Image (cartoon, rainbow, N blue to C red; front, side):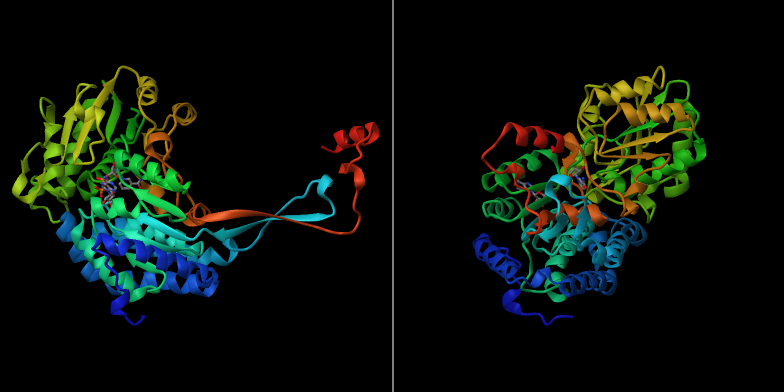
Length: 470
Ligand code: NAD
């Protein structure tokens, strides 16, 4: 563990400290230290060490912010960080190598390759729902690619934010990384300065603010946004397993997951069976009174609590609906056939309410999805292979899982990211490494055999020959 230099623990609570900190980080990047493979490996190992050594403190902070149990926090965040680090450590030596590509005849004799190079200082702005994962996961990709970073955790998950501001300077290279805690003022100030890439996780409205600010400097952005992720359930499905997996992915973290199924589309005739199976699983998982379950989380803030319960106004609640603002508790709730124009079906729910929308035929679900913004994730349950292909080829989504919830997030070989309104860019594994790298084109020619064909004076003969080559 590195010695903690108090002068470097910028916890830049004050807006005034942000500009000098960014300058210092950018200057440090130019030293070239972050490019060394040994430095990257050391930082990755330190991230791993930090999470493992400090897991108890991290669990406490997560419980304070989100009322989450340790096992859920491990599954969704700490475990994810560890596997992401391990995956990078395993493959990094291969990823950094020049990637040889073929050279066309016109450029022979010559060699062509792609050389990944780091971008510089990356600004990472995290969201509150998975407050550790959503800053450390992009950080792992950024560090693997040889960058340094300035991290701005979400102010809504205040305890994890504070902990990250304490731990990151203790474990990581103090000259290369800094944590800025804060909200609107701090983020607004951060966005006034040029970094070499911005990785933002959060809602669409702020995503646009980030992209506008980045445009000022032509800074590339990764936007990990959200949206309404549909879940299509065909009657050919395995009912029992489907219900368990929907309940797991919807009610983890009390529904505050960007890739949680936002609503279910199901044939009218099959809906009663599916609803019963979901109700049974809810009772199995969280008992008859989820308020007393140790395994069920809470809403992050009063503002979000009020937002989520407002979606229940005028709805046909077929399960749950109880809530308690003092504990920021909302019971796992199922709503049947909400009005398509109601806020419940217009806004991303990002809370523990699952609308079940019935369709007359399952094919209708495809047009339902296509009439709305491209979702971050799409789920399909069923054994009908033709329908599966139809859904895959006629809809667009950032990520798709067939017959499960967001299990794709556990595979570092798959990109994690949205499309259209649900985001741009992706990370995890090599895709994340590439996302935070410039893939530099390199061609090396030989002095031997310099074909004069391309040089003036141009002749008809040269032109004819050139056309055969290009
Ligand atoms: P949030 O309130 O934590 O905001 C995200 C970040 O933006 C925070 O760091 C915050 O300080 C900053 N911010 C807020 N207002 C700002 C402003 N006016 N100017 C500059 N910065 C500002 O999180 P949120 O927006 O409530 O997050 C929820 C959304 O994030 C949902 O839509 C969810 O789907 C999405 N999300 C996406 C992913 C993903 O990986 N795609 C992951 C988690 C959450």
